[in-house]
Length: 227
Ligand code: UTP
Image 1 (cartoon, rainbow, N blue to C red):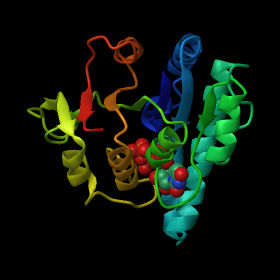
Image 2: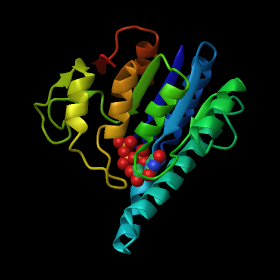
Image 3: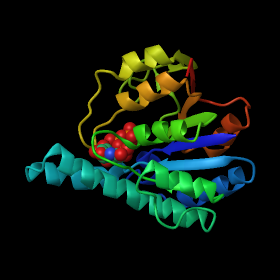
């Protein structure tokens, strides 16, 4: 299969760098690479926000804050590449065409952000189009999509399934500010919709669960229908 994983910065750098996690993820990536074509797009997490917040207070434009965010995502891509080792690119590709060359070379493509105006989820969804991926995994610190914010509501219920139309509806009014994308950005949702990309939302922290989802076994998460 051709798989794209959008690996949220929240699992790579929740507060501090999660070294044990990154090491285990690197091992899983090498294991998956034996059977699958694999692309990983890393988010910026706390590092992006730590830099964006003071920059915004200095009066930096949103586009400059985005560029700072992109640097953070690329820094995380370097770390994930390092954890995977020689099966991944040495240098994070700057755009999708360079990332495709990495795949053509038989390696795992590990990249961060590309240009201002969206999050790494959009980069990952677009890359799923470029490589005609069979599966797009959105791995964050939440184990799926809930009917309410699970971090604020104890009675929030995880949705097992959701249509792509419902997902587009859910994210269309969400923030597009630098460092402030929640759940999924609208561009990513629209790309998933237009190309009907099979999409799963799950927790990036549970790597056994991620493996199960890829192997077509029972897993905890949300599957997007029509996606
Ligand atoms: P993230 O993709 O980590 O965004 O990129 P996020 O806000 O944390 O959202 P999630 O985790 O994907 O839901 C960090 C920041 O880098 C900039 C944006 O400002 C983004 O918020 N960025 C990232 C871009 O401008 N372009 C990109 O291609 C990627």
